[in-house]
Image 1 (cartoon, helix red, strand yellow):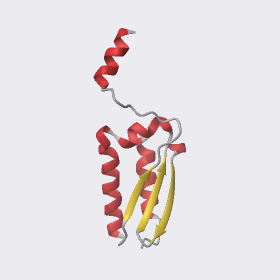
Image 2 (cartoon, one colour):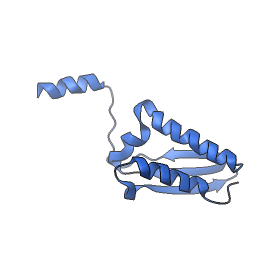
Image 3 (cartoon, rainbow, N blue to C red):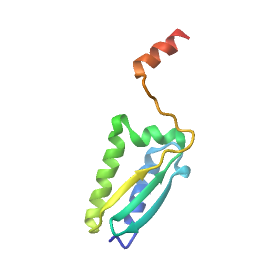
Length: 104
């Protein structure tokens, strides 16, 4: 297991570097027999930045975390908590939204 919190320091550094509200970034670290679980909480406005297009940014962050974990002989997983007030686009494409905005 990872004795130091190098994985937590790494995720804090990466996420705080790319969000608009770095002071609102919070990580929680739990270690059990399954490995290390990092839980990430960010400002609602930063969720889109963290997830990225079709989840690409979140996937990249998780991949980098696994590499850090491998270096320390640990399995590291990342859970991104959806903050209250975060909005999800459901059922409408971005093109539909732009057309609706133009009608106004």
